[in-house]
Length: 287
Image (tube, rainbow, N blue to C red; front, side, top):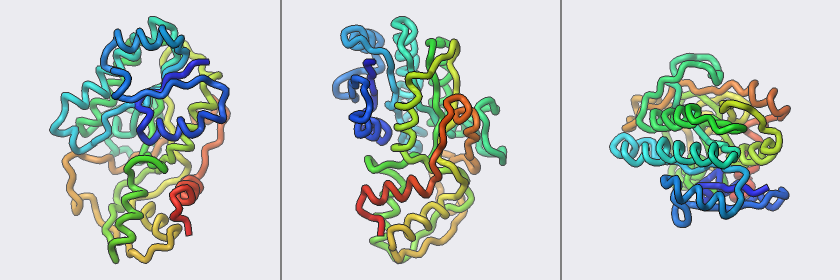
């Protein structure tokens, strides 16, 4: 089986790359330097030449605040490129696994979000990701899925965990938001799930699944646990969202209900602290 991974230098793509040696698939890892996902012809030629069976689309415009003033590029990567990928996948009968986000919701329904709940993104980033989902669902490549995830961090790239570790070593105290609730997603755990379920994805219309690690917490709780596991003496103080203004609105509540993906693929999802423990060990910061 030949698998194309786009955005392979990002957090999720890098974790897939590291895990790839454990699987018998034949991988093609690409990024913006060697493939143009905004060009249908470029994508189609690559997929035909390499006889691609599965595309895992990890490419995304993820600069949430920058997107507020860069709507054109956010739309180009998060909507238009997904449309092109979906067309190619349908024409060549390729499975497409696309990664989306909890930002498609407004964060005002205070119970775990199921896949069928009403979407209502509050930011340019969230709107661009939802528009990409809708393009994919309209084109409807067979045997394809969308995975919505949240609060992604990894051994690779820039993320909340690495920022907290850096600041925790530099500062005596930090203010971290306590009124945004959700669950972190350890990219390595998500990567493993994706690679495990590829052979059993079989659906006639695009299906949406939620995935994050298990548990519920705030960014404040997350930061506290990072400091504790890393044995850093930085004091974490709870602050409200209004005390840390950003260009883009964040969902106040984005806990994802994961019953659908667990039942569909008979999987167990790791607890968020276990993912954090593993990530800190890999980073050399678990004390």
